[in-house]
Structures are given as C-alpha cells and as structure tokens.
Image (cartoon, rainbow, N blue to C red; front, side, top):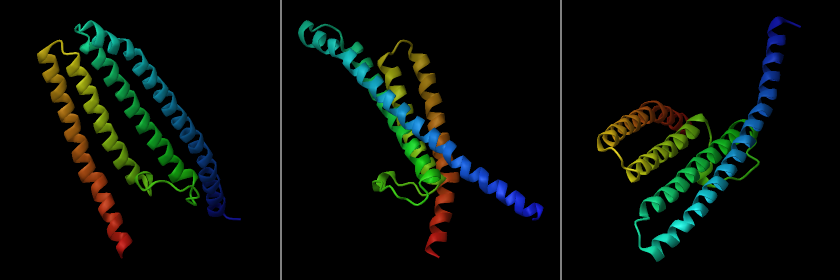
Length: 178
C-alpha cells in the first residue's frame, strides 16, 4: 500500500465522520429554532395584557404593544433562518441521496443556495431590528446613525450577494446547461 492510498483512506474517513458532526450541528440548529419559536410565542403572550390595556384603558400603550410584537416577529424570523440553515446543512452534507422531499423553496443544491437564503433572511432580520429601534425612538441622531450603519451593512450584503454568490450561481447554471 502506498502513502497516497493511506492518505485517501484517511481523507475518506474524515469525510464520512464529518457527516455525522454536521448531522449533529443540523439537528441542534433545528432544535434551537424551535426554542426561538417558543420564545417568540412567549413574547407574544406577554404582549396580550398590553392589548387589553390598549382596548379598555384607551391609554398610551401602543409603544409597549409594538415592542412586544416586533420582538416576537424578530424571534420568529431568526428561528426561520436557523431552521433553513439546519435543513440546508442536513440536505447538503447528510442526505446526499436526497431521500427527503423538500418543498421547492427549501431545496438547497450547494453552498451558494444556502448562502443566498441566509443573506435574504439576514436582511429581513436586520430591517426588523431597525424597525424595533424606531419604535423605541429615544435619540433621533442615534437612530440616524443606526439607520446609516444598517444601510451600509445591507449595501455590503447586497454587493457580496451580487458579486460573489450571484457570480457563482451564474457559473453553475452555465455549467449545468452545457
């Protein structure tokens, strides 16, 4: 047996064992998304007294009401991102034979598909975070800086998506059509 054969065997063993580590990471990510969904439900439930206060007291409870529900939406969105990441990792590294049938919007063929979905979801989470900051409006200048920073991050993510992920996806589609 040559050194090249031994290295190939070791490499194949690492790849095979690595699938199980990714499976664990995938399962834990999906479980974490479930916990975040429960946290969002809990945040939503904690906002219910504010609904009654708003309806019956006619007071100025819209601030608390908005914060609770935007926080719940934020938790739900992060949970969805984690769920998609967990399913994507499972689909890419563990379920190589595509034995599970996923909906078309959740099908991930390579890491670029996973990056595209993550980028799109990250932008939504960032926008929800900004919305929550606007609702808690305290310092207009600070909000302007925060909005500018978020705009720069979204612009950077968009450029990255178009230049790196988009170029790779275009190359892949060209290769698949040949």
